[in-house]
Structure formats: structure tokens, C-alpha cells
Image 1 (cartoon, rainbow, N blue to C red):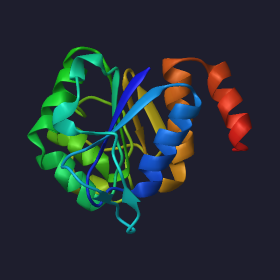
Image 2: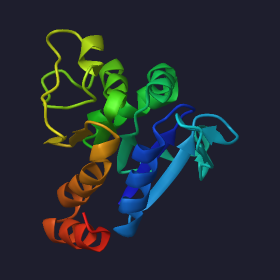
Image 3: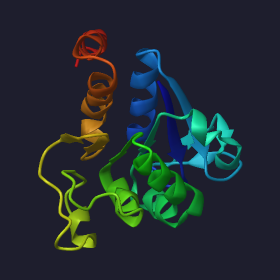
Length: 180
């Protein structure tokens, strides 16, 4: 599975790193992509070095696009024309998309949440219209949309991706290896 995880300054490092690590343990090709060149400073000061810059990515080769949260990072994902276009393209083409935490706002910005079951960090729903509201579950899978609530649900989220895209058995094996 080819997965793209964009990193923006202010992203939630636990969400990004746990997703990347767990999915790579499953043998997936995960590409960390920075929205701009240079080191990405995450929300708690952890510095991340991306594999590639956003503009270098071959979108047609990617099967999934997963957005880590963190409010400052999410604001950049919402405002980045390339990320927004990719989200709409992936959805239109029936490819996988997802988010953790506040990054559901970027999915909303791309108009991907109408009529969908999703979740997000508690309180983020206040930024959404009344007719587009999350459900209070740690991880939600709705078709090819996978969302999760926050840093503490990142392992569950990554394992849900493996289960949905590959198999329950593969997810269970990874879960066992991680002792979660």
C-alpha cells in the first residue's frame, strides 16, 4: 500500500510518527511529505525530516492520504491548495483518505464530510456546521474514509487502516507485536 502523510509545522508529532511507524511495520510504503522545504517543527517542538517535498510527489502512485492533526498543522492543511486538491481527487477516484484529531477540519475544507460518519478531537466539532457533526468514537471507518480522535487513538487508527485495507489478521499480528 502506498500512503502519503503530509507534515506541516505544528502537526501533532505522536499522530504522525505512530501512523508512519505502524504502517511501515505492516510493510506499507509510507511517504512523509513536507508542505515546504526544511525541517518540520511539530506541535511539541519535535523536529521531523520528510522523505519528500509536497510538490515532488507523484499523486497517481499514492493509494491513501492520511492527515495527522495538531491545530497549527491543520490550519496549513486547510489552506494548502495542493493538499485540498489531492483530498478531492482521492475521494473522487475512490482512493482512501483519513485524518486524526483536528485534521478533520481539512477534510471538511475539501467538502469530504457531508453525509459521512467520522470522528475528531472533542471540541473541533464547534468549528463545523451543525449538519456536519462527528460521532463520539475513537476510530470511525466509513467506506474509504478513516478518522480518529487524537494522539491517544493513533495506534488504534493505524491498526484500523491495516485491517480495512489489508486484513484483520495482519492488524492482529501487528497489534500483538506492539503489545497494544
